[in-house]
Every structure is written in structure tokens, then in C-alpha cells.
Image (tube, rainbow, N blue to C red; front, side):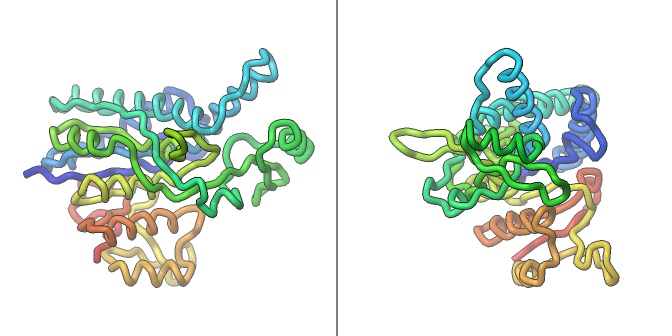
Length: 311
């Protein structure tokens, strides 16, 4: 019987440091990542893919803003922007896989599902938005946008610019999750929960909200709900480290849930980088998953790749 795995594409699977985000750059990066996943397919895995969209959704917001300034076209809300990037990034991933499959002689369907993810409208995150999104502004521009359009803007920690900040609520339910599981078990590669999913609340049906959902946590929830055997989080380092880039730096091979929780409590993992990935790994393993592997895409052919988090 084939194993079922969920793979969360990290940001560098799409856009790497110093790149502008052109179509040519992104399709090249995606194809390289898809090429790395062939090793799992050859080991008889069924795959579900999740992905981020940070730079891409920022670019979409810039495009909307430019359209509003020049042509008076109304800028779309955050949930709409996430939906746009789910489609465009899903297209890139499908192209990447199909190009690799043509070369490798692999016969698999690849499809992208536009995926809404339900959050709680009373989530504490809505009371204090802290997740920066979109372009950078001067203080004066940010104050004008805040006054005219609403929203919250905050000073960037690394510059004198300001960015819009939104809530990052906890994902509660992935829509159409039974279809995702069915399609994956039939051998189709399914791309879902793009950018963490389109954030919606259940209120007389569903309603989109100004928020972004952590893509690793949304992918972990997907992995739990479809009963995945393994959960892979792809990032730009081969393993998780303690004392990263400090004296006593140590790469971690296999750690237990208890050890991972202790390292989190010690502040070993950066909040803007590895900590959310480790928390997503813990969510998966603590809710029935066998193991989560955090690694670099190019390491997937190695049997002992990455840092493995187990019970």
C-alpha cells in the first residue's frame, strides 16, 4: 500500500533571496523542487502539496494598489488576493510537475484545489494584528491609508518603513478535505491550502476575512485530517539547528516531541523562521502522525535527510 505524505513548500521553493519574482525565476525554482520530489514518488508515495505565498501576495497587493491609483480600479481584499495567488502558484506547481514527469516518464495527474480554511471569528489574533503583508510605505502614506481605508499599519522592525499588519488566526477546518484525501489516495497529486488557505469564517454561510494563515500549520492540519503517514516541511536549510549560527551550533537528526517543546521554550528557534515550522510538526505528531521531517528539498533522496520529529 502506498504511503500518504503532505509536503509543505517553503518560500525558497518559489522565490529565492535576491530574486525579483519573475515568471522565469519562479518556474525554474518550482521545477527544481518538483524534481526533488520524484524520489518520493519512486518510493511509491501519494502526495498532497501545500505552499506559501508571502512574496506573491505582496506583489498582487502592489498591482491592485497601482491599478487603484492610475485607473481607479478598486483594490481587492486580502482573502481575494490569497485566492489569486492560490491559482497562479498552483499553475506553476502543476507546470513544474508536468515538465518533470515528461522527462521521467511518470504518469500522474496533478491538480490544484482552490481551498478555503475556516478560522474562528473570535480568535484572539483578530484583536492584535501582527502579521506584516504587502508593500512598504512611509509613515505618512501608512497614516493616510489607515485613515482612508481602515486597517492597521506598523513600523517594520528592520527599517523606517511601515507595512499593513493583519491577524494570523489558527486554522480550524480545511474545506473539501474528504475530496483532497480521496483524490490523493487515487494517486493524484493534489495542491491545496495554498498560502495557508483562503481565510473565512462561518457566518450565515462563509465570509472572507482580512487575515493570513500560517501555511505550515494549515498543511499540518491537512496532514492530520487526511491521515497522512508523514509530513514534510521544506525549507532552506538541510536540518533544524540549536544555537544556530552561534557557538555550539548543532544539527538535530531525530528529536522527540518533548525535546522539541523544550527547545521551543528555550527560544532556540526563531519566531520568524523555524519556530512556526516546529510547532506545525508538533501539531502533526501529537495528533496521530508518525513523523514530521523538516529539510531542504534537495535532501529528499537521502534516506536520513532532515530533522525528524517523532513521538
